[in-house]
Amino acid sequence: MRSIIVVIALAAGCGSSSAVGTIRFQSQPPVWRVDDRVPQDKAPKARGFSRLFNKTDSAMLRRATRALELRSGRRVLDINSIDEVPDSTWFTNRIGVRDISLEKLRRGPDLVDSPFEHRPWTITGGKIGGASIGFTFEDRKKRKFLLKFDLKEHPETETAAHIITHRILHAIGYNVPDDHIGYIRRGDLVVGDGAGKDGIDEAKLDAALKLVHHRDDGAIRVLTSMFIPGTPIGPYPREGVRQADVNDLIPHERRRSIRGQYPILAWLDHTDLKEDNTHDTFHDGYVAHYLLDFGKSLGVMATGEKDLTVGHRFIFDIPSALGNALTLGLRVHDWEHRRQPALRGVGMYDTEHYDPGSWKTVMPYWPMLDKDRLDAFWGAKLLMRFKPFELAAIVDEAQLSDPRSARYLVDTLVKRQRKTARYWFDRVAPLDQFAVSALGDDAANLCFTDLMVAHRLRLSPATYRSDTFHHDGTATTFAATASNGRDGQTCVRIPLTTRPDRYTIVRLRVRRDDRELPPVVVHVARVPGGRLDIVGLRRR
Image (cartoon, rainbow, N blue to C red; front, side):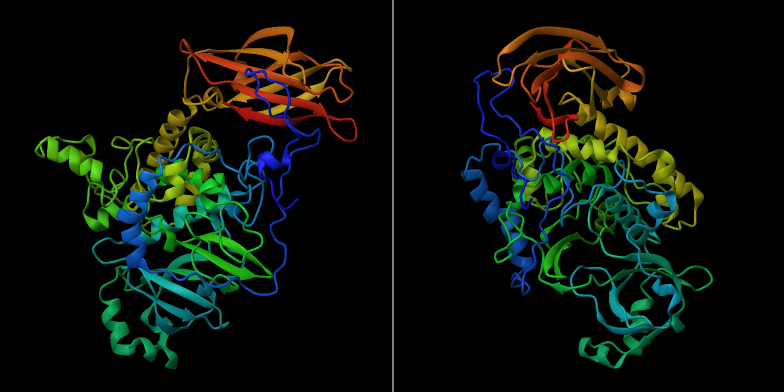
């Protein structure tokens, strides 16, 4: 199946009941892999990209035109029938779906042997883009890499933040380059003949290395990032699709795999998301989509820029400026009191001054602005799949020299993780992990997990009211109420309709803290082979 645009993949709607809506699903299992690798003879044309224009467009031009469009909320199109994002060239379900060992969490996508095993490295040029010091190089196996450093003023910060965020994003399901962290000596770097085109010689290399962090024994801490295989065709656009890519059918601002990044990146304080930190490559006949450059996450952007507004305002934030003007600059924000932890390798990253609902990237990123609470719920439940010991294993990969820094980062990651999930789980009925099993021919057990309870984010009890509907949306006489079970897992016995495929619609309503949350509507039916399955799910 090449596309899973929900309104196309579903069977025609019928009925008029507002209780369960008009969408009906085909009686077949959900799609878990999208065939968006249809081969093309040649790479799509690379997009022209100007950083200056992109900044101007983000700050003023497109921002103004989007405001004038009075955009109404539009749901995403890259989800399957049960409201999940299937595997594609954009995203691959990993943690919580596939078994990932601690060793694999540590390695991330590192499928090739480390360049640290193949020294010396030949410098071939300077790093293009960004403000950090960097070079391109080849190892002894002639593989191409980017080489990045930590500045003297902020030892271990950028490299640690990058490797931690890089490993987490890969474990969640995003495509990222093959990156390694370690230490080298000056003798491990040789200036190649081709580096002269960028004005790099041995003296220029020495001058640059004086600005970067060295360990007490003289070793230089570095991050290497392997060039992504294939033909680079530039960043992917924030809106619309890439022209001439036959597989790019869904406007990017309507992809949950992008919109749902918001709570994940807020958790990691990856404020440097922008178009030129994405990358498309044409390889094996199709285009794959990558995220790049995470060295400014975990509070490092605020530290390097010495700017407390990072994560709380856009770089050109007109509403904030107007608010300050109206209060004559006397308004004091809570986040203005945050301070840099006195720990090596740690940026301005804390929980106390973090608001999961108002966090901002430095530049506006349109899919993030178009997200809805369902997109954010998807991202929040993914980030909650990391257990504290798994986060500790990932932080350990950053090779921080001070154990207190590692402990601080793990502790803060866990606290922000829970704060993020609690915020977004409060805005939906956070039911997940649905399963159904037949009890004879006319009844079934429908089981689900309340993620708020399972993760112990709220201790107050919850009740779950269920009622069922026929295929045409008319209500049956069934209604039942259950309480949350152990570890948030609850099962409800439901009657099945008399249709040959036993298509039954179940509405689940959650009540917690004297508040009823928007319902979840579950569609159950027999699929080919006769097995009873959940064929559709709609969150309200």
